Length: 201
Image 1 (cartoon, rainbow, N blue to C red):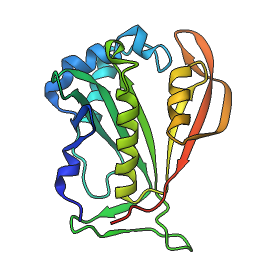
Image 2 (tube, rainbow, N blue to C red):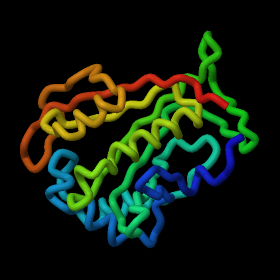
Image 3 (cartoon, rainbow, N blue to C red):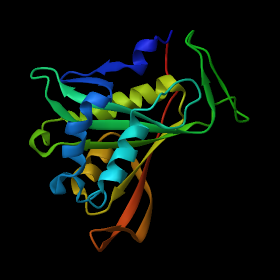
């Protein structure tokens, strides 16, 4: 049975994952404007672009939503803001609170649902296993939501994220040459995918 709690907070060994909230704005702004964090993600956003992105991520999320379901990553031991992780579902889904999943189904009776995964970790919290814990917890959530697969896009020069996704069972299925422009430099962009098994009761 799915409780509404999963919409609000999740836990790992080191982390408390709670829905990103308005009170996180200052931490979020610091994260997404830090050149060391975003160097393989995007150009430093303008204030208006940052505000629009933040508003989208803290928006209401419920049954059938296809916007970002974003979580603040909080270190349990210190209550420090570690970073963010989020999912964006692709397809139609009706998630009932009694645990029943309804939506479009393929010929095998499986929900043709996938999710896009994205995450960012503050520099001072990198290389401490936080990203791995967050990614694995999101994969579990995707199974609960009825997803068949999860995808993530990584700039090819981002070796740390490439290693992390591979370690978590993702495979690189396609690479797009010179497709991402960051601070005037073109990078190859790789698409990673992990297929999921149905969640067990």
